[in-house]
Length: 472
Ligand code: UTP
Image 1 (tube, protein in one colour):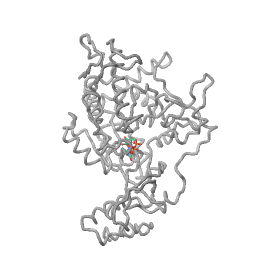
Image 2 (cartoon, rainbow, N blue to C red):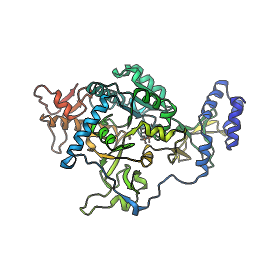
Image 3 (tube, rainbow, N blue to C red):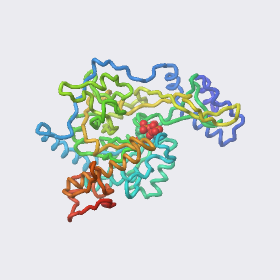
């Protein structure tokens, strides 16, 4: 059977034959684009999702939810020895090439409203370096520091793949060896209307969108990441998201604790800013660590207090994980990944036959399906959480303005740079509310921690208010 007949038959079998309704009017090129779109649809999974009215929201038995064990950010006497030996182990693993970095950069970035892939967004306060450049320079620093050649796996989607590759080409891979940068495209899921019919956004285009950051696990298998990592001897994948300019692509302490405790998937947490902060919450349920989305966390639990008045569930997820390669292999071994699907009501453009045009709906008209990476945590036999100071590791660029925007991320980059300098005994002028008065940017090529900055400081440094200081 040829491809057209095969796909027509499959579509009809799943009640989606309307995908071919404009076939006769399409040019040859358009037909081939449509066939490519349809070829990517997992009809069987979609049919199950459409039939299943489960909203994907987690139902929580409040009485069973506990705070998870969390390694504290400050070692203290109790953890000092463990943290010192874990850091040494992490450094050895980095030096031995056992760690690879992976960024998920396939999202649509609708809230930011930036036309190009989010990784190409200029973010650093003075040099306007893009998110991708900052990560690349972090990795170059790690390679230099540990004498390794860390592979960097970059997950894209159909919308971001070509422009991301071009961007790296045009920028000469920011000094990284091309052979160590591996792009791979994630899977897709189509959007459906209220009758469960797949939406066509043009006569020859299916409304498909990336299948969520959880889709990275299956894509790692399908697109050769696991194979590449195995060939290089990489045992642990350091996972982060493209929108966080403060992230460190590999932290020796975190890596060492992960390996020491034989964790299969570990997470960084930050103390929550307030009870109802819109971040995932780490909890322990039946002895397993897992993340409950803020939208699924009952208010009572969000506000719950310990006897000393501190917040009971205080560990917020910042989407930084270490994931064992062997764990991803075991989760995806048979080509299936059994993470739950989350559904979201969204506005999705559709093609209107009556007007022969694509319509932008004013209200949500469709359901989209996504998998989330943190749903893999409770499937692990062992999983640890390490708390880190928010100001050191997390300031995401999500929105065009307001909270979690480019402005707040730049502010936080300057704050962190000022704090690192102060830890090096450099005086930073501050205004009456404590904000640095100078704009300071530290290149990741110079330092990726306060300790490293200290080692690089040669003479005295005087900073004037209003100064623009770039440390390279
Ligand atoms: P977000 O949940 O912030 O989604 O993604 P988004 O698509 O980037 O932005 P909005 O919601 O449309 O404004 C968090 C991280 O997960 C990646 C994103 O690129 C970002 O790094 N992601 C998300 C993927 O790689 N693939 C997806 O399917 C979804």
